[in-house]
Amino acid sequence: EDQSVKLFNIILVMSQVFGGLAVLLVTVWMSKFENGFSWSEDPDKEFNYHPTFMVMGMVFLFGESLLVYRVFRNEHKKFSKTLHVILHSTVLVFMLMALKAVFDYHNLHKDAAGNPAQIVNLVSLHSWIGLSVVILYCTQYAVGFITYFFPGMPIPIRQLVMPFHQLFGVLIFIFVAITVAMGISERAAWKHTCWTKDGQMCAQQATSSFVGVFTFLFTVCVLILVLNPRWKRQPLPEEEGLHHLTSS
Ligand code: ASC
Image (tube, rainbow, N blue to C red; front, side, top):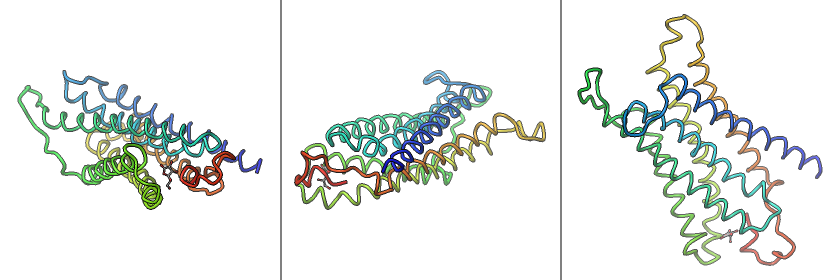
């Protein structure tokens, strides 16, 4: 049991390092190798919020929200549940701002002479899969909120929905990593030219690729921590018999 807790902690630390590096590197990519951030003056710079907020929200905070029920498995359920809702509400805000950033970038784009030169929306596979993930996420959030938080459904309905809530949460989290990889590839193929100039790997390209590598490593660590039944939440002594407070 001691060994199991040790292993949990090691993988947990790894997950935080990988997740932190993904967030750090996407910020470096967008600020050092692209032109940094600006919301309303320059649509090209507004775009840079898209990858940054998606990695911060849909990757990192989403993962943290899944981990809540494992990291605090010895605390009261109410604490984890509240944190889970707060984290996912934050993810929702990051996600919606990241979406607005990319649509604004397309719709407000200007050519070099300053004339409107809109970029057509929703043509890439990244955008199709990404929008599907966004719709799934919003549905999962709404169903989860109504069923478990407010107004809250009767216990049998909560129990009926729970396996679906858990499965879809994990599935959507995996789809996010796939969508991120496709978004990075699309941006790199479209914009990066340093490796063609120098004829070798360049820092911009390496940085963007490592955002994807660390996103995958973070995702895998989170899945290992979440899916191992040994690390699931155990009922507290005072919760024994109160099945509705203790499952999952
Ligand atoms: C909740 C809660 C749970 C589940 C459970 C159904 O609201 O805290 O543990 O629903 O009752 O699986």
